[in-house]
Length: 174
Image (cartoon, rainbow, N blue to C red; front, side, top):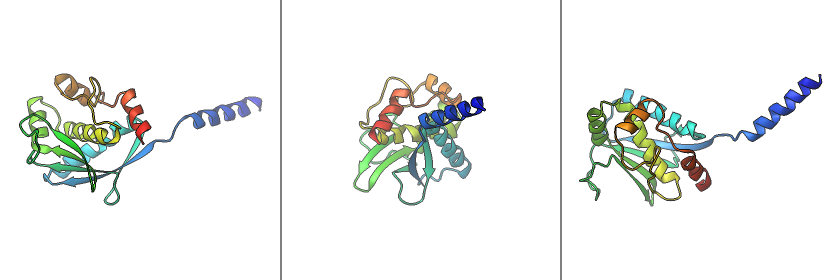
């Protein structure tokens, strides 16, 4: 009886120490006409990336915290000549994570990576910029500014995620 009561107290203490995931409400706009199967897999992977950092992603049609806009090309951005795959913007209409689908597609093809996986990681990276207090890159993790074969391998293996420090910055900014 004492053991049962002790286990119940320990269980309550552990539950109290485990924070509930914070919710990130995202809206997806598919201006690039990305195939549905690619989008479904990418959205699921974005949710997994954020879950590893302690966040619950909700894909919504109204009242998003951030809009993820997938466009075909880079058109209209000052950094159009660079290999950038996305841009995060804070606008009067709310934060928007622009993802340049043709660039992601080219990157995935060049690095022989799964398109849905790379699309998800670019989406999560740009959303990460908008959730952090500053929109800077870091030398490691999902928020690294330049990706190469190492990041592609990490993404394919589920290891390209927010670092503990990056997740903490997101939590602190919320």
